[in-house]
Image (tube, rainbow, N blue to C red; front, side):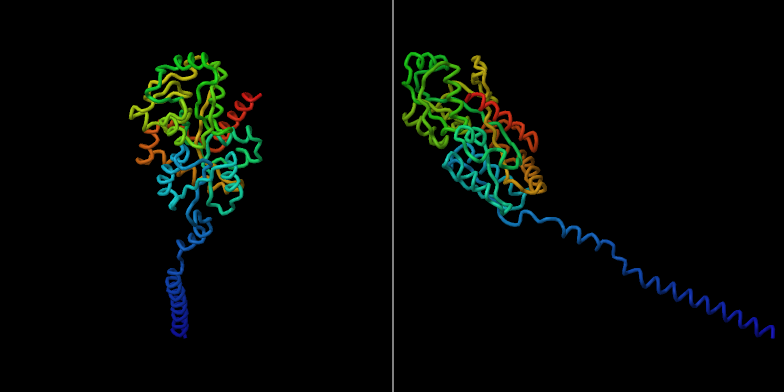
Length: 332
């Protein structure tokens, strides 16, 4: 009897052992089902895909202008970081409204606006419905130095020579400037006022056309970006009489050097239509910062004597607000 009970206990223990072994083996078979890395895949899929097609960068002036050259050079350096082709489209006319309205009405998420200080001056001077407040700031890139240049053979060797001649002959000399509403036009008017001279400011749509007009003797000089005339300046066909901003590495007297109390700083940058998602603007701003050090673009903007002035968000808006106040004060 005792042996029978002992056998039963042993059998019971064996049964328990077999059950635990079965559970253990079953657990081991379950382990391959735990594929944790797969749980991360849906999170990547949820991120908004941008860009999904090529990008259009619109500008308000003709091909060959300072802003057009800047955008074309920058676009090449942006294509790598952004991963898409960037096409520059020129829509001049209507005091810049053709370009601005086109971008304002674009809702495809892939159309942006290259801007200069014209975004500030033209709405004020032409009472336009769109202003810098109509767009989202992306990135301010540079200040583009502006100068007054003439033919190398012109009879004036210094700014004082020209000023004295212009004062003695009011209304005699024609100086090419931007169209009414552009900063070049405003700069010409400010220079006249401060230097007490009377010159005719002839509107030109783009700086390239103004440079050709000076070289051809159709006007006596022009106010434009240093970069627009740099090739002809380096070739000795043009000379600068006065600058509105310091030009790095070039000895040019500025309006401030002559005691004229005004500041003209032509910024260049990018804005987006209202409602553009912040994550898209952040991608743009990050790519624009990287572009500044891309070898090809870095060489371009240094050769053009552009002044690096990278700003985004509120800092960029502040520059536009201050320039808006300056222009409004001038026009009072």
